[in-house]
Length: 280
Image (cartoon, rainbow, N blue to C red; front, side):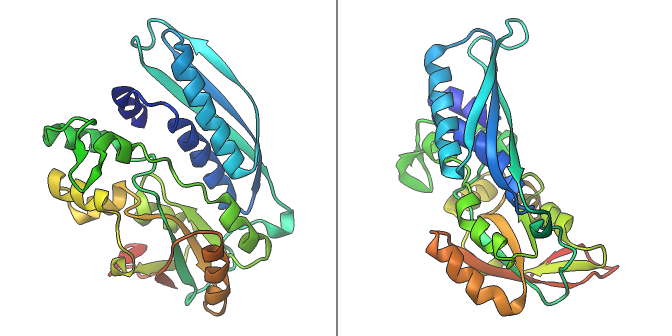
């Protein structure tokens, strides 16, 4: 549904980056380096200008991820899509040495959760975002209430951050025990996927500053904190699990690659009377 925002704004050069990011970020959580990407663009009737902008974004995302754009497919499906609407899909293939595959099996209680800053809302929760914008009586061309020097549409179309180049060196050095790309389900549902069955995590939400767009969405939409954490990345787009004695080394590597890094919590024994991820 972020595509509907792009259509409303009339800007199509960023959603291709989102498409690549959502694929390659899911690859690197296993330690895999993206090799190539293919896309699929479908519309009622092809707009050459919009399609060219989309593909330019896809190419930019592939350059940022260090993978090849191997080709793609374009389909015109009148009757299935409304005039002016289009849909995007894609997939990426990556490669990793078997002994460098990140499985989470070596994670133990006491390991540290490192959060990498997101660039904003990324690519999840846009049905709710669009509803809140409608409730607020705003258009995407209006100044963002929380960032008046930019339009609301411009802020909401900020591309998903691609974490490939910054994370791979630490992964290939064997310093990362587990990784979670924070997409739909937020921190509460994505982190448990990488933890062994007997472990949970405690996260201190005061350890990082959320981008102002999230505070605005929560306040304007009356969205409860638990729902915010389950719907949005809330400012953390990638979580890495690292041994306590490797935190400084990994943090240094990530910051040298341009990441904003936070120690957001720790791994702990799973408690039967508590959620897998507890927020403090």
